[in-house]
Image (cartoon, rainbow, N blue to C red; front, side):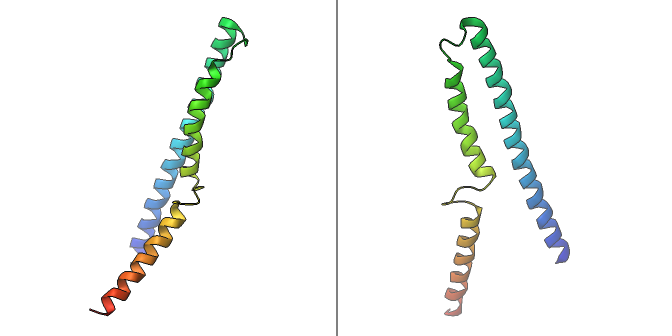
Length: 100
């Protein structure tokens, strides 16, 4: 049983590290690509019209939601909510099985 718990913790930790790697890779790509687009914008027409901000805004929304998921900042349906709901349903299931 102890090995099972250690293995389970290892798997959860590895999944967490994978989530973090994906988020930081996405964030790094965002910074590099938006910087390149800003440079292209400046070199072609100056900053009279900053069209690169449209890409920054659109991708930024995606980064924002990715961060919410990665860092469990969603107050409605985050991991903590899932754990509470699972525990609640398991307890309800135990109560129903007592009467059978």
